Length: 278
Ligand SMILES: Nc1ncnc2c1ncn2[C@@H]1O[C@H](COP(=O)(O)OP(=O)(O)O)[C@@H](O)[C@H]1O
Ligand SMILES: [Mg+2]
Image: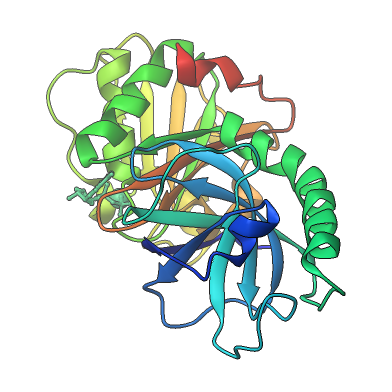
């Protein structure tokens, strides 16, 4: 499923889960539309930037009460701290099951433990490939930090909504490769080339591309892959031109300032796991 993010303040719930041994973080979503009711494998982004594996219930809680008001409640296995009053986000990764009523809270608890076991691998895998940014400078910093790991022929796609920070991330990569000065935002230019760094950097923005032919006309396949590092913003405009082996970087806005920068290598692109902690 497409990644869905809900953001809001953590409020006190009724405390029933707490009594039954599984306190849930009750998020008052600022988004007006909730995704389909159900139980989801999720990642919880706390206010301090920590990412925690979770299981999120969206909708009613037929085992706990009769209320028809939907809530967004996340069980964070093993988490002990206090989240009340924090502004946090949940990232929904996949839907595990429908909501249903259990005979009692103990039966519900047993099911939630099974949900958590199922969700655990997916949530941890996501967290291992994700970095949290709290500002444009942070996003540039993440780009700069991965740059030393980049090699000749690497192709990196940058996706995320307008204003997510794709160009900021690209600026960070340029800085990390040793390209001096600031990069112009290439939104109105299909290609900018920077050849003063450790490797040549080809920075594409395909936002305005209406037909892949426009890219072939300027010889873009020469850079897919090329003799340096190729960055492509809005690569979804011409996916057929992308090599199988690439690093997909998805920038997921959590709120006005916070982003998750998520790295997904495909087609045999080397693992990025260690990059984030270096
Ligand atoms: N954490 C963040 N990371 C990146 N940009 C952010 C962040 N928080 C706020 N911003 C703002 O969003 C803008 C993103 O611009 P840009 O990188 O050009 O987006 P995109 O290329 O994805 O359309 C930044 O210039 C900054 O003003
Ligand atoms: Mg941009």
